[in-house]
Image 1 (tube, each protein chain N blue to C red):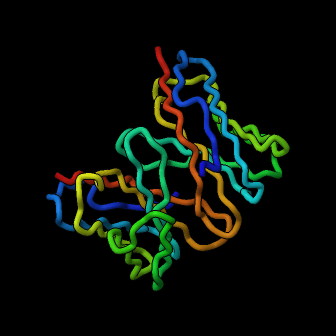
Image 2 (cartoon, rainbow over the protein chains, first blue to last red):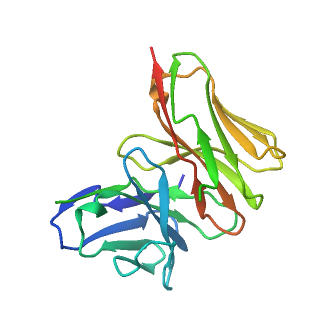
Length: 116
Length: 112
């Protein structure tokens, strides 16, 4: 199957700083990427949907100014957590699809963010 | 609003036994029902998926049973192995994109 790579796998940052997480589709072009957030022992909650070259669509309750998403190319989307606080500590996961209908979503390995 | 309900929350099965996880949905517009396996600290990986025009799909030790009228679907893991110990999520998607709605997850432990 197709490979989606996230970087970094884990990151620790100080409260008030910003951190960027990258999501890359390694062997296919991803017209749409999704960003999820997962708290311990909980399900994946969709944060936003990003399409290459356009603004991301955020789910209700997700602060777009805090979680900046950029999908500048067909193989890269980034999530920047701005002014991070301890409550932003979570597991962030991206997924990507090729854009043709009824295709599988390929998930990255996730990024563990800890804000201290 | 939880559109996909999953049970049980946790499950312990003996090696060689059958693991059964159930999901129920509300939105009749869902047209694709995948199951994902997730190990600690990793992203979810697709196990098997089914569409509503099929009542059952089998791939190796994994089988999905689908009941469209009851709006329920389940995952059966035959001959469960310790390596199957993971968290399993059902999901559902409406047509036209891969915006998935996930169930709450089932933590499976297969004991020797």
